[in-house]
Length: 307
Image 1 (tube, rainbow, N blue to C red):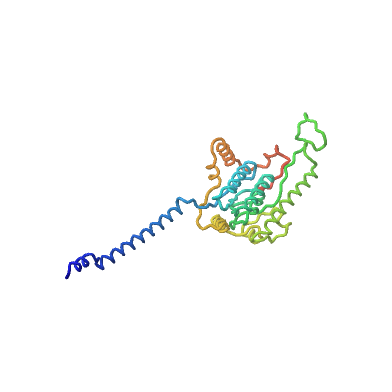
Image 2: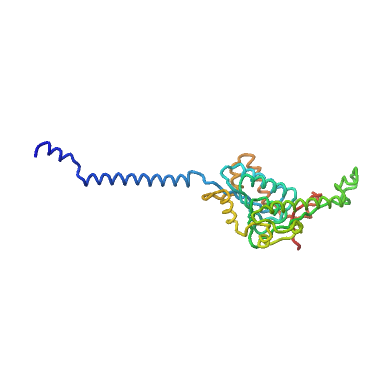
């Protein structure tokens, strides 16, 4: 064997070493791919924020404080890019007609921008029900109390006025005759009825009652409400959240309280003012219609069960 043959033999790599090197390269490549996948999953689940389903609570009588709080929460939900849908949790007897109308119109505006599902708990009556019909769809439990479409009027009596005051015109003190106020009551009743009929006639489970049947003030349980088209589905709050996510096209999301998100966005005097509003709202006593007489004339969409 010549010298050149010996040198050629020494520089050639054995076949086993070549295979081992290729296998190591493949293993390293696979590990890099796996590491990249794990890192991507970590980023997608922890560092990149998930879209959110926002919860807005209507858990007390409808009045000025609730109107103020819900106005801020609805506006926040509308403007928050990460909140993709909203679920209204309703458990309320209703209350002020004017406050109820204001919240109703705000929910309608919200639903035109993001899916809104109403989830009715133990009670969703009168103004609270009207707010609920502004949602895209309504869920309720089998035993939920739903409906009570009607209006109550509180009218001042002339004899309660002090004799120290002199008025111009027969209705300056009271705002109108008893007959005139009854006409106003009828107008508000018809408006309430018509809003329910209009909203529910276009719902996924459309209304099956005549307008006059809707407006008797009757309370229905959830099962009846589903049969009559006053709600869309029987289901839990979780079902309502799932439906909101479906309408928003979400598979992976977080569920948040809009109140908490809104408060976290505030600071200084705005935060202190909002905290005072919520503190007063949470401490509100049970609605007592007789104690409202100083505010009359007033109209209420309120369920008052007989004692």
